[in-house]
Image (cartoon, rainbow, N blue to C red; front, side):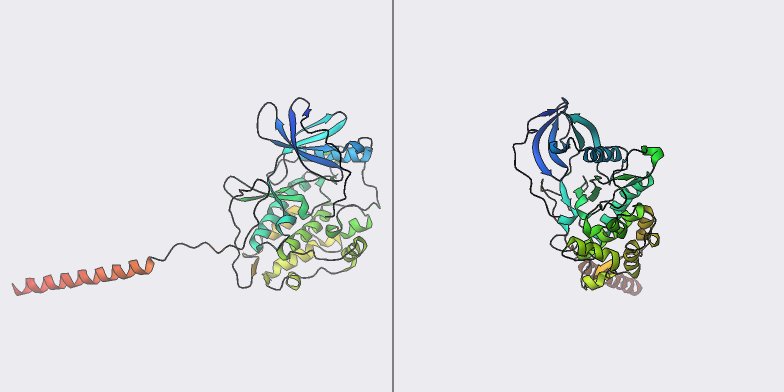
Length: 361
């Protein structure tokens, strides 16, 4: 994603305390709406991440409401594959989110140099769909799904955990659960990231769970091939492709990939132009993905395996390599068999000799 340069200024929050509970110690990054910091918990506990709305947006009611809606969404979504939010507050008029501090890499960083091994890609997408299915089940749409909004971290056993984050374009479709509130996106307004935008997003039509399904089809395609389905140079050309062009097959983009036909069909269904032809929601897409016979895809001439090496770099996880398949150590097996056969034959010879001697007595 192209980052818009921001005017450099002294950071007013470094070394500051928020609400007497958190001390900001490091600036980690920023986006168009907020800045992310590392902070200590004054009363003890692990460091946390704190997301603070930009001060120039304090009087922008729409942006402030978007920020607060993200807080409401994340507070209501407890799941291992969704970023966990611990607290929400206001400091000098600026709202902030307190969330778990993630050490890892985003999916777009993992796939930057080469596509992931197929089993790794499918497993990570399965995890994201699992978290997204919980959100859809509670009436929450993401509307800005992309590889940049999924962080992969390592758990204590060395396994890979995908965490869905950045619900900045969240939409609530369950008024009974979340309250009706104000509609922050008017009909006809275009929102999202062009490479992942569904046809209805490109035209400003209403979004639903199938909008997120389309984006997940793009994400899965990207992780398996290393490229977006539509590689257009401009925003307008990219949106036109989403509206009119047929998504390419995986093998057309990555010839050495050998996907199961059901995997190809799943991506085509997820990226259907008519949203009524897609999976109804993330849960339905997840069920279809899990129903594909194993392995869902392989690489010609290789047997990729999902590495479970734990992360050691505090800044970024190592990428997932094409690992050799795990096998038992059988190098001594032939020797053991030969020795066993020799000993068995010797025992037979001894027994036969003893029998002959007994008969001659």
